[in-house]
Amino acid sequence: MIAYNIADLRNADIQEEAMAAFKKECVTREEYETVKTAYPSALYMPNPFIRIGLLLLTLVITVFTFGLIALIMFSNSSPSETTTGVVLIFYGLICYGALEFFIREKHHYRSGVDDGLAWSAAVLILSGCTLLWELDPDSITFCLIIFALGAFFAIRFLNMLMGLAAFGALMGALFFALSWNGPAVLPFIYMAVSALVYFAAHKYAGHPYHGPTLQLIEIAALLMFYVAGNYFVVRETGQELHGHDFQMAAGWLFWLLTILVPLVYIYGGIRKKDKILLRTGLLLIAFIVFTIRYYHSVMPLETAMALGGAMMILLAYALIQYLKTPRHGFTNEEQHEAETLKGLQIAESLVIAQTFKEVPQQPDQFEFGGGSTRGGGAGGDF
Image (cartoon, rainbow, N blue to C red; front, side, top):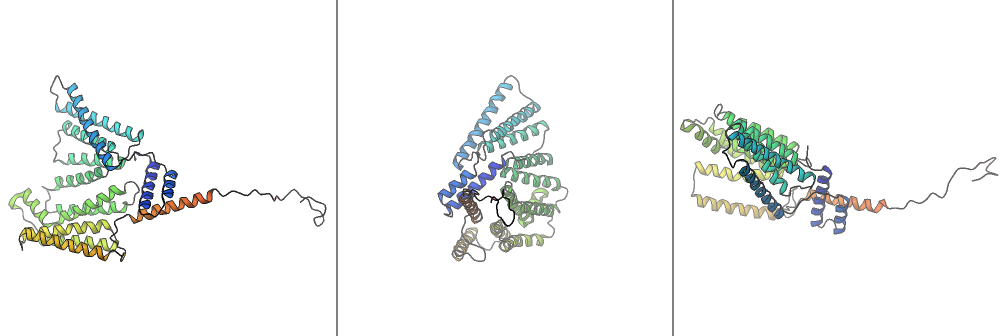
């Protein structure tokens, strides 16, 4: 299902780990070069600046090419929405074909070209479907098409943002399905679905190729779980949809969720040494302060922001000083220790393999057999 060559992906991953180990001075340059030679990868992966440039160039070429095609096809008449939709889908399929070509023949991987072509193909096909079937952007069908396209491109082309778009479309479909028919249960359904998505993504987050996408979905699911139970979001969304007639039931429960969920995230992150839980919980502390401050003002906003920022700076400084020496499995080092250790192990195994594989085999010059003994070894060949 993955469009890229699996062996190239695996070797590129090993090379990245070896580079991380080399930057940490865990392996020498010769050992790093040995790893690169032993695990060659044909993938084209430019640096971030070239990747952004290629992405912009690809989008510009795609837009101008479509403009030229539209100019040629529709120069004599005003096209109907159906005709425009068909042309958009057709051009989206051309972009998709170009994407497959660049991956299969040119070995592009996160080069900007494949990103641009993937997004162009998805947007063009979505726009064509919208015109062809006269879809409303706030309809369930529209969200489900985004979900299908996002899931497909995320799985086949390892596109992280496409996976995030698929998750957002799924939650959007739930919103449009339940916002009018079941507003009272909508927050709880959102929380239940977010929890299911989080546990599913967390279970398979160690996948060698889909892992980054699943980790991003983990973060999105944790944020969505909190937002669904946040007092401010539930109250304001209800009033926006149903006006001032909206009666918020069990408001105390949403206040509890607003305050307790980030604390549970932080506790779970510390206990399991899960940095996604920990960082998400720390981020959501700001939302607790915002929600309380919105309904219960105790001081001017400028004063609250200044005091909060000063407290966060002092807390961060104290934690950095405390964790300079690793304690209880935590450290302030930001490097990828696990990848570094793995790269070191790979380089080490290669060095050992190179050392022992060329040991010359001694010829066996002492051959037995062929002799015949009679009577205690007398009179025979040995």
